[in-house]
Image (cartoon, rainbow, N blue to C red; front, side, top):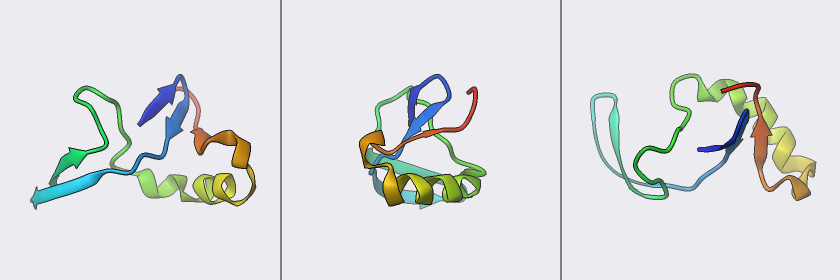
Amino acid sequence: MCAGPGLWRITDVQVGESVDDRVEILKGLQGGEDIIGSGAILLKPMLVRALQGEAGNEEKIGIGEK
């Protein structure tokens, strides 16, 4: 979810039912929050780097302007 301009936070969610390309989110997000869906796999290298040594970064990932 969005954690500020150009920053995104990894957020655990509980998923419910899925139909076609839609997934029900039961816990972890509030209505109206911005999320990354399509193309999120492209962020994996940055995620791995953040989790491997930037412990003080609170898992925030800068990806440019939103």
